[in-house]
Amino acid sequence: MQARIADGTYPPGSKVPSVVELSTEFGVAASTAQKVLGHLKAEGLVRTEVGLGSFVEPPAS
Image (tube, rainbow, N blue to C red):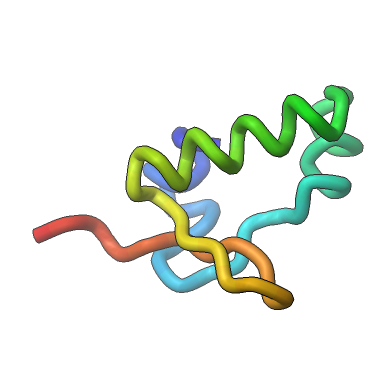
């Protein structure tokens, strides 16, 4: 997911796949997909909006 954000697959402001979509796409458990999103949020790469999903943050200046 970090590589996809870095290469522009998910540009700033775009919505990233949900936990269910990630677990299906990558063939991992939903808990693993949730940890990935948590890691991306901790790294400042995505923000989560309750009821809307997770979105790519613009690069830090």
